[in-house]
Each structure stands twice: as C-alpha cells, then as structure tokens.
Length: 313
Image 1 (tube, helix red, strand yellow):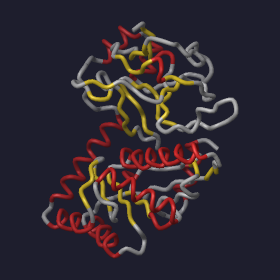
Image 2 (cartoon, helix red, strand yellow):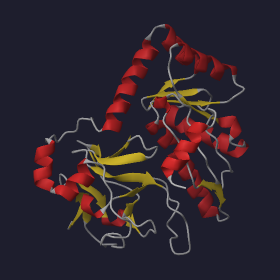
Image 3 (cartoon, one colour):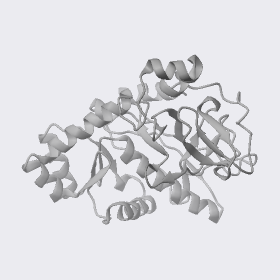
Image 4 (cartoon, one colour):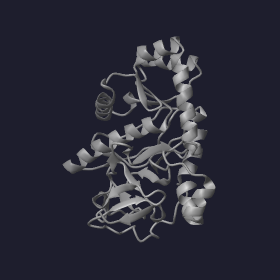
C-alpha cells in the first residue's frame, strides 16, 4: 500500500497517539504519519521485525534513536508523554487552551523495553528522561511546568507560531539558503530535467541510474546544483532500493552539515543541500536481506543520479 493511501486511511480513523510495537531488539519497518499542522495527532502504523543477532540489537537501538530524532524534526510541536501522567496532562491542557496543535508519542504504549530506551534517548537529547518532554521547532522547551509557565506568560504561543511559519516555509520550499538564484537562472543552468529534480522535488525511476550500483573506492559526491561536496566515496554502500544511498555526510565549520533534513509535507524527511537548498532525496530505512546485509541502518539517504556529480579527491 503506498504512502498516500495509508495516510488517507489513517486520517479517516479517530485521533490517537503514536504507537510503536516491539522491543529493543526490534526494527520498525513501516511508518504511516500525517502532519500535526493539519490539526491531527501524529499516528504511525508500525510493524516490528525481530532480529536475533546481537549486532542487530545495537543497530535497532540506533534506528530507534533516529526515529525519535525524525519525529522531532518532522513536527512543529512534538510531545513525548505518558497517558497516565498528570504532568503530561497539564502540559497538554496548557497547549490546548492556547489553541496549539501538537503531535504526541505516548511512551507507556510502547512496551517497557522500548519505553525505557526512548526515555534514555530523550536524556541524551535534552538532559532529562522524565516526561513530558516538549519540543517546539525542533528544540526542547522543557517539561510540564516549563510548558505551563511559557503558556501563562504568552511566550509559548509566540514560539509555536514561529515554528509553524518555519514549518510551512520548509514544506512549500520557501526557505532561504546561502546561495540564492531565481527560477529562471536555475532552469537556464540546470536544464529541464535537473531543474525538475533539484528545484521541484522531482524523482527518477528506481534502478535506472549508473550510480545505483556504483561503489567507488575514492572521491566524493557533490551537489549537482552548486558543487558542494556532500558524501565521501566510503559513505556509499550497496542497497536494494534502486537509488544511491549514503550513511554519513560531510560537514564544515562555515556550513555545518552539508546535507540537512526538513519536512516536505509527505510525512518523510526530505534532505537538501545546505548551501543551495537543492532537493537530494529523503531519509529512509532499508531492509536487511541476504543480498543486502547493510540494510536497516539509520538515516540512510537516497540521492538520485541527476542530483550529484562524482569528483576525484
């Protein structure tokens, strides 16, 4: 079932919290989500794939951390909560009274092992493992008392309004980047097909590109829009998804990460060039098979042929 159909079905159901299934040794293999910006609570349809090897348990932990980080990045307002917690209830009520729409993840529905692991992840991200943990625009604003205080003095609504505006700009592609050009300039430089892909969030047929199975021993991949180095040769690995995939990107003092994620309204995390904003693909999670032992790694990024150039080091 494709993403759009799953979203449509999810929207017909009553509002509910995000539900995970499985344990610390499970890998989430399917996700359905729709935007809290549309006045709904984040909902995911997840199924667990149990992995018996100890190495895969570590991999699953990294996967879970990436999913938590992705939820924070995709939602303008994200609340990690427990359904029975009075402090969580007060935080929710404070936001509802302000007319704030938010996504929730009820940790007590995840199973004890996953619940504890998510709280450990929150400890690493925020410095506290208690709930609620409230994120606005990707930043943690604290817990229940913090949320109530910010709501009382009017700061919370202002923060959320700014986060929502940023979210809408990202979804519509109205974000400003260091390298700015008009559509006419981009189209003249890139040509019709590359312009469609890089500047209009296009894609290509999987398995159709020479870089799909290309595994260079040296060199790096750069943005086809502005030439910024994105990935080293060693970051690319074999995959069965049909597009080139990478597990890490370059970073520099002046630009930070050369590849950044942002919501695009699809429920997935779009990745773009941090200098020119060209569309590069999406974060996704590959499957582990005998033919693809590298699958299941967190934050695998697909990058289509028209979106990159291979350059020598």
